[in-house]
Image 1 (cartoon, rainbow, N blue to C red):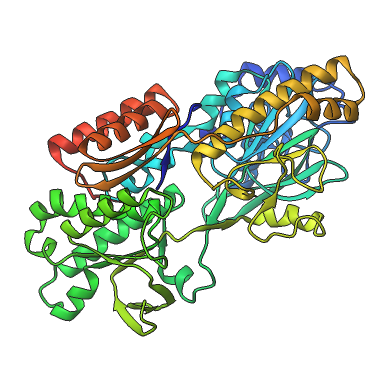
Image 2 (spheres, one colour):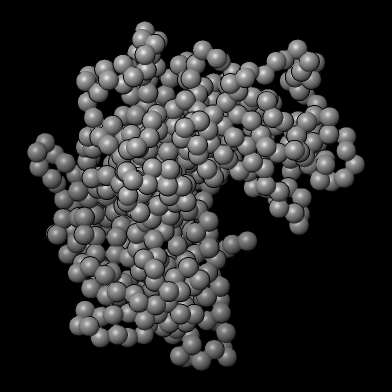
Length: 535
């Protein structure tokens, strides 16, 4: 996964898992004051669920008990209450800013937006920020998953009471009413699937839902391939590798079947695919060679890329260096090769000379691009005449979603002249947080919102992306680097670049806890080797 240098850097509440908790002082205060509390007519969030209410907590059934526990915890965290009760930070003097997603862009806004001027609500089905540059290393046990996951509630908690986080997914939007429909999916009671929907009103909305994998319509990919986009994907790959190697170790397996099982195919020669192949080589050469020496000699890594060379965004010298390292490490490169179909045990490819062939595999990892998520298409459908791209949301130079009012978008869910990179999203988040803070300041002195935006367009420069360099790990304690130096570009490859890559990761991780955890993971790997044990 491409590492871009940058100048800026949910689970269900525990009480739900344990059943109803004793009534806290905060809950008692809420109960005592319920009669005197009059909900605002413009309450930003209401629920369509019929499960809420503190009065339900003494119900006899398990489902009723679970619902009661959820309702009693609403005061601190959950929006899913009875209609009319607000759980957004309460201040009629401040406007409500809703952030969709917990990726690079929205997390940067979360850390920089002025909470004295906004009620901030974060909505995401993922309750953590994921440090994606180290995701490939999680697939082979170089780093542990929790080391690169920063809980969003930690960030929200540090910003104070003017912020709320809801672990839910946005399903629909009414751009005219400025209202979002969100859904919380839960399995609080085994064997049940409880969905709770709620609506949130916003004054300003930032869409940063990211992207998902792109199969390009290739048959069989969704059914048979592993992806590498989320933490769950890394865990699935780790489990698949372990199971495949264990199965290949049985004596009754034929030589042909063992050869198939031990052929690991990576589709996509971009940074994600290249880094995964490099991490996989390290696992084989450093650990599997000790655990299963005979099998490790038979494991093959094949990387398939449709373009003439891997890493097309990097300098040609670094591409040549990477290909040479891969050849030395025994990683097979098949460039100018397109995957036509993925079957249960083989994939069909079109070769550079126009011929077709079948490649047997035991594990296939698909790292060949991204596409827009469902909500991006939902928002597009509200203004179909303007939002004509199927790749994502079309934005202007101020990150505003074209055809809408008071909606911005950033990161992988957008279509712009900038590449879908973590560095881009992070810079967009920092720029947009300054923009939103300026809007709040100007609105305080000018009640005409249209005038405020007209003035901002004149005095605020549009977003301009500034590349601060590129890094990618290629295995064998080697990396490649492109670093800006005044008006020149410095390129480097080898152990020194790998050291710089590691230093960058430790510096850019979102907290001291994460940095110490990753450093500890690296130290354990150096001293004791990796572990491939999985649940």
